[in-house]
Amino acid sequence: MAQISERINIMFSKKDLIEIKDYCKKKGVSFSEFARKTLIKEIKEQEEMDLLKFINENCGFVEKDEEKEIVNFMKTYDETQTEFLEVSLNDILQD
Image (cartoon, rainbow, N blue to C red):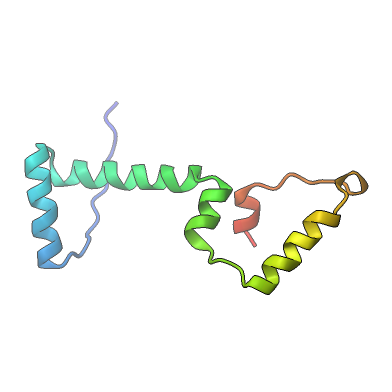
């Protein structure tokens, strides 16, 4: 059975549209195919991004005082005295 497609409209600046169309022509793919594949690839990359990569891309560095506080905490922390709960990136993003 054939897959039903839906049409959407996307607005581009003239400059961006020319650049995208030129790229598609060089690659020998239609604009629609390029847009579809590129968007799906971006979604998959974002969904599969591990926590460290997410933090590196979206969070700034801490101040020196805060860094010292964290380092001191890590030196004195006893993980055997605490119960742990595994948290996924989705758990964090839902809040």
